[in-house]
Image 1 (cartoon, rainbow over the protein chains, first blue to last red):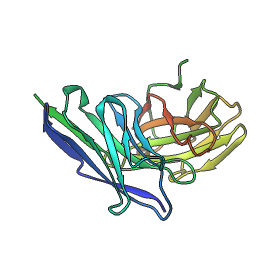
Image 2: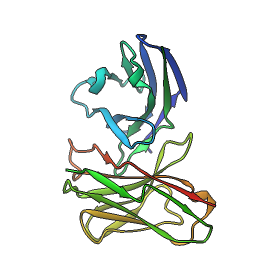
Image 3: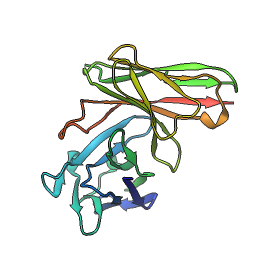
Image 4: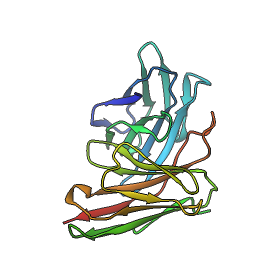
Length: 111
Length: 115
């Protein structure tokens, strides 16, 4: 069965610092991978998705993620954190139907 | 274009009461889903539908029923609410299952508390 594991339930960075949120996947077939962001009291918004077209995927708000098959990873990065990036981030994999989500990583940005 | 909407936004139930959550989408999506979100567990799939008149069980279906009488609506029912069903419920929809259409669009959520 396909699944994802997010390493670190909480990540804290200073404004302007690099953001790195980790996601590892488990899949016996080439996976479709996603990163979603959830702001407080809101639904999930798609940041980016990997569908095998390119290993480096650029998303909204300056985020990007790199698919590394050898490491079974799909880590999310942003070069410079902004206060508005504070939210919860979910990595997800798309099996036959529905999505399998990681437990989430809450990002805090310190001024 | 409202996207995916959910009603109600908040609800408090007593154990044993029943209720229905309504999800509506105006994007003409074939697929619709119900998830629950619990702290530290991400989102888990309850039920889903691949088209009008069809539903299927997801990862955590017990205690829930669903119906999809119209393409744009997907209802989630709790027949006899239990405290373990206290959660935030999200509805999502997506286009038919093609190579480029796995993205799901989410509603704003319904926060349900069962006392």
